[in-house]
Length: 81
Image 1: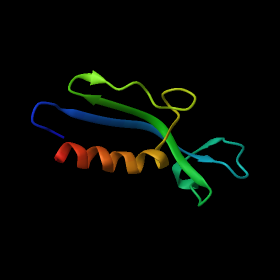
Image 2 (image 1 turned 135 degrees about the horizontal axis):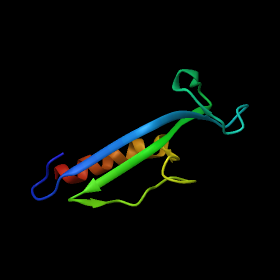
Image 3 (image 1 turned 180 degrees about the horizontal axis):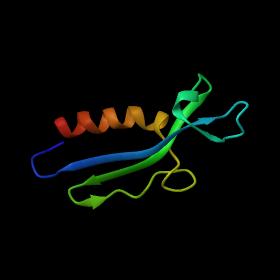
Image 4 (image 1 turned 180 degrees about the vertical axis):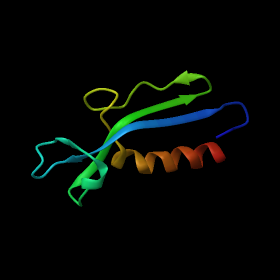
C-alpha cells in the first residue's frame, strides 16, 4: 500500500490451524481447519520503514489472524482517508 508519505508492508508466514477444542492447542495443517479452530502464524508489519513489534501471544509465530482480520480492514480504511 502506498500512502502520501509512507509505504506499508504486511507479511505473513507459517500459518497453522490452532484447535481450542480437542486439539490441546496443537498446531495443525490448515487443511485440518474446522469451526472450532483459528489460524495462527507469523505476522510482520512495517510502516514507513519502521517495524511494528510482533503481536503474537507466545512469540512472533503465534499471532491470531482471527483477531487481526478486522484490524487489517480498519488500517486500510484509515490510510485510504
